[in-house]
Amino acid sequence: MGNHNHHHHEHSGESLIDAARDSLVSSGEQWTSMRADIFEELARHERPASAYDIADNLSAKRGKRVAPNSVYRILDLFVANNLALRVESANAFLANSHPGCEHDCIFLVCDECGEATHIDNDEISEKVRGVAKAADFRARRPIIEIRGTCASCS
Figure 1: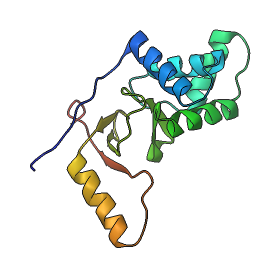
Figure 2: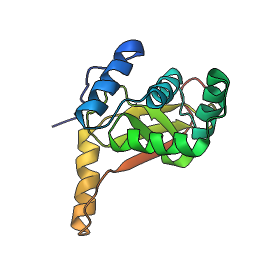
Figure 3: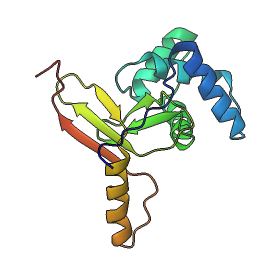
């Protein structure tokens, strides 16, 4: 079987926003202007962004305060619908570059610059799910985070 990494169509810019909107709408949710603004703001960031970062930037852009709580609620909706990925250890979020595509998350998180690289590896995912299953545990969404130093920082 070897190293089975799969690649999906990676979206960016306008095509990412379109793919996210289509994915959310097809799951029966509405693409409101607030959701659009939050997704756009999230997609602008190359590194994981916190709800507070997004709320601050949107408040400045919209000229009125956007509460971090409402940003959190929408980010949680995005995570539930696979439009965003949550980096648990940083309590921050990344736009999913292939919205609606479901797979387990493996993040390489740099302690120096904060960059989180998202990788797919089905072999690791299957092993992790197998370990959970052997313990009579039904894994909903495994997230693996590997902390360390990226190539640029080391």
